[in-house]
Length: 219
Length: 406
Image (cartoon, rainbow over all chains, first blue to last red; front, top):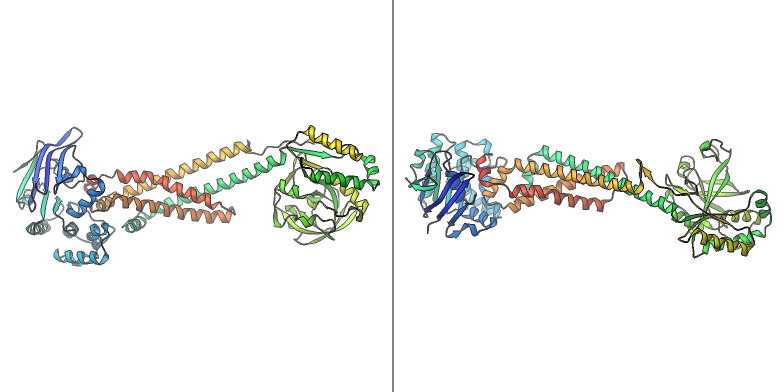
């Protein structure tokens, strides 16, 4: 079984069916793109994959663990330790500086200060954002903010990164920078699931899926 | 992490935090005022009830010439002494001495409001109203001093060369503590020392009304060790006064009258007469005491609910403003329990700070506060007002909040 396995998953919002008895598998190290027009259910799928939402029926196995058997606390821990999130609006806390934003998953786990400092400095160097460390989110550009979000997603060395329109708010130059980072991350073995409505962005993925009639189908 | 969350929350939304502190402080001030009013009403209600319940007035049966004739015979002192000792030590009732007597006060500059008859519009120059009391009087009417002290056992000794006296609250402006004054009392010139001024609005039941002690001189009931050694003319008058007082007993008026009649016959004097005293009810705002207490209780409850509502409402509003931040934190591994804990601590801190401000203000304006009760209110209010914010955090939908933007 892969890192992600959805079996007969259904999800509706009122009368609108998003997924209906859908199956979906992702193996470790894959770079998967999910493409579709706005409102097709891409983000709903990503929310299910990140345990931010529950399916109406069906089973979701993450790294061979049945998610519906996990309580809120365990899901939070799994999310913190195994999944990195990147969202379109970066998901940064405005009132805290870049260092704090990147360190957030470690702070949540009461990691010693010395270790936090070491991890943050190492990741900011890797992503070439060392000069931003003391700045606040409102003092940096969109491309820089997304790099910070990627740094935060990577700091716990997750098995998988779920990226929801990571370049949606960026200009072309910043977009290509972020996609390069994601590609190089995948090359190091990190599984990436990228949701986008942009075909150019999707083209960097090794596998591309779309949601049609409640099913997740490869393109 | 909890500390970080707390600091962030306090640093942001400062205006809302200030508003919450202001609302809480106002609520606590209202609670303190209501509590103070309630305890005041309860105290007065209890003292009025104490002042009227199962109380009988007992008086001698001598009038005019008959009284003069009785007083003229100094051997009657032994009879009166016998009666007084019987009253004082009778196990069937408690004898409260509150005997009115006019006295002469050798003082310049006292306004006429203190003179006897002033309230009725025909004051008597140089005559001042006094009441002779025993220890039971002090205990029964909960007489307390505003300045100085009330009577102690040794103050009731007739051998005191200087007689200690207490003065009503209104005398405080004109006389000093420890001041020596010459007092003409039942034909004797006595040297008296002011040992205390009573609390304002002290009162006793004189059988017809609740009589204010604010303008009265309070004389100790002078007790005698050796009755034969004393000035008989003075003592016989004093003892006639001392034998008329008030009876506090659960027995019926008929049973006590029977006891008095038998004792009077035994002493061969006119039987003393017992009568019930008027009943009084404390009223305020047109409400009798117990109803008033209920109204105040409901008033306190309403204030409590209003403060609960406003505190919860403001915290939920604060959480709504911070939902995105909380969403990001939960997404990155912060547990909801830690967020809940930070909110609970914040509620406690704000409540405690408000209580501190309200208590300081109340100490300045009201004078005293019941801190243990207020702390219990504080903790209860904090815990209950935490419920809606807690629900709000539990219902925070991550998928919507994260996508919803900052």
